[in-house]
Length: 268
Image 1: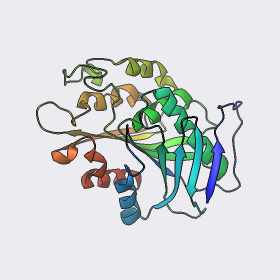
Image 2 (image 1 turned 180 degrees about the vertical axis):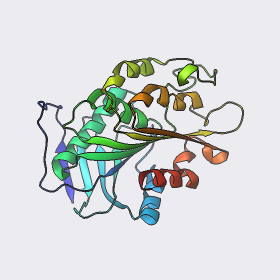
Image 3 (image 1 turned 45 degrees about the vertical axis):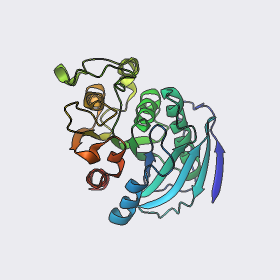
Image 4 (image 1 turned 90 degrees about the vertical axis):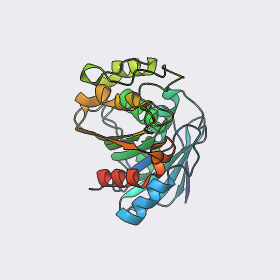
């Protein structure tokens, strides 16, 4: 089945909700990172199908203008449905743009399949799409509501050498990062929009063990800064650190131990 939906602006009045004829089970969306391709999240999804009886139902491809194309088939009875999200422009670093693309996907899923809730697994820059979608649109109850969020290798407070210097590896009082990147500062100003006591978070990050406290790309303090940002708003929060060669930034999403932790969190 091929469905093409052109995503328009939000344009929803208070109390207005989009409906479809049949409401499906809560889907789990998988979002890739910067410069990653359509196969980036396959290991996570395939293990969920094999070990946890989940079902890959759709691929949602989003072009540069926000047009969403669905490929696949989603029967209403599908158990633990999985939706792969692919951004054709996988190089943008504009957080507003990629969070709008996620909004377009969710609105299209709501209109076509009647979803009211969703879970999400994001790697690397995909976390910026999730975070800023919720910070910018989380107050709109008529949109699908996030339930569980798995963040893998999230660059919440910047990338070393790009947004911040390669130093200061310790969090400050209350978990505050020692240096605040511009987008993190903006996120702090918007966190009141994040749904209160609704979302459970699993935050996964890697440490290569070379004394630099990073996964080869993202400093651990940047990944761990999510708790300071959202902690008071969350239903629950847990963080897992993985170490060794398979804790490298790109390899975290194919690390069997990481995948097992993700699936246990989503479907305990």
